[in-house]
Amino acid sequence: MGETKYKLGLVSVSFRRNSPREILEAMKQASLTHIEWGSDVHAPFGNKERLLELVALQKEFGIECSSYGTYFYIGETPAEELVGYIAAAKTLGTNILRLWCGKKSGAEMTGDEREAFLAECRLAACIAEEEDVILCMECHRKSFTEHLSDALWLMEKVNSEHFRMYWQPFQWQSVQENLVYAEAIAPFTHHIHVFQWKGEQKFSLNEGIEEWQGYLQKLGASRTLLLEFMPDGQLSTLAEEAEALRRIIEI
Image (cartoon, rainbow, N blue to C red; front, side, top):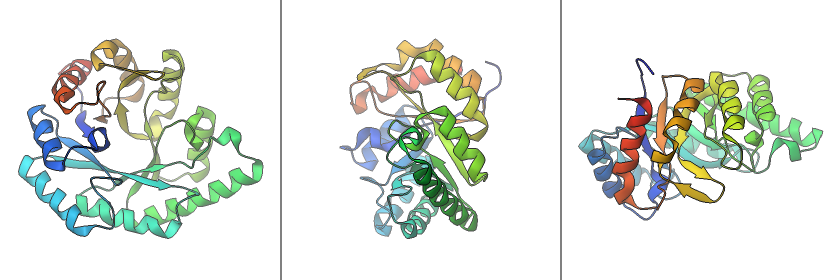
């Protein structure tokens, strides 16, 4: 795939039952350099002491915070809470926050609901611009970005460098459908969540090498690739999955 500028990391919510130290130790052994801390368990945004502990651990293990994985739902979580999440992200050393794009797909919304949701997104983008951070929408089922047409509509309507996307394959769609989504959303995409699922089944990333190489050809070579969830849920599997990720990008 030629010269690459990928950063390889992990989403901490992959191991909610493990401590931050255990996670970072396993990451170090697996030669992963970036972590997305989740706000639900490991990095609650209102706990400054915990956040500073994570910063110290990052320094100890030589791992950078790529992003802050929040459970802020646009249109559901009060907008005033966003500033607290942003402050937490900055403490951790990142300017990228993962947000959830509502709780239902755009196709399920009425015209009035879409316009109200758009207003909430524009408000969030304004806050992000003032705070000089980037809000990235989760690419997920049962959210506004479930369908490509709605995701593109939202990116174009909000029209802000501070309001962008993540990407991950939809395990309920075909590879071809996911390739189309990846190529179209690439100009708006920052980070990528990496896993190999088909419906409810989870597989080793080793079974998706060629598939993922196809996705990355559509998405481009300057990305942060974050492993999300192990096929067996075990921390001991991280090294194997990280090695598969390196095979995908051929380094």
